[in-house]
Image (tube, rainbow, N blue to C red; front, top):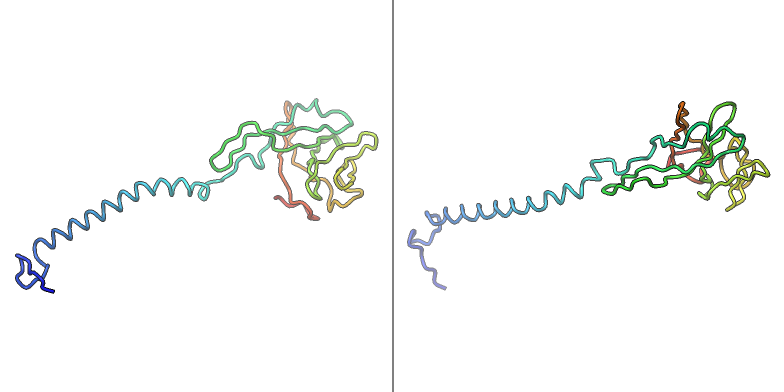
Length: 186
């Protein structure tokens, strides 16, 4: 095969003025391509990386309004549903039910007990005739203070933090690990 030398260099070397111009154009085109790719992929990376740099949920562990103190004055426990706004990554859901609690007065203080059974997470109800709490799923019974009396539940009902003010009772709703002997946040 015969090579044809360039007009710039009779020996066929490409290190002439056209070569440096070609290198400059190729470098410029490469830089432009990288810039276009970065302008498209940069926002995508920021969007996908958002949950890694920010809290992905809100509403967990905040105090939630349960009602006025007069609502909890009797000798029977009162079941309250707790509603809060939830933020999960990119979604915001307003006024969604996050859980329930039994609220009762013990020694002049308001106490809140989770309605979630520590055994496997079924709902805990109140039996007015027996004056006890019970889980119908696996027949666990709990005393009025939440202590387990019988059944497979590994611990008593989970106590929730209560803030009783003059006009409003608030509860810090929290979920706990099921099937453990100690109350551990989930």
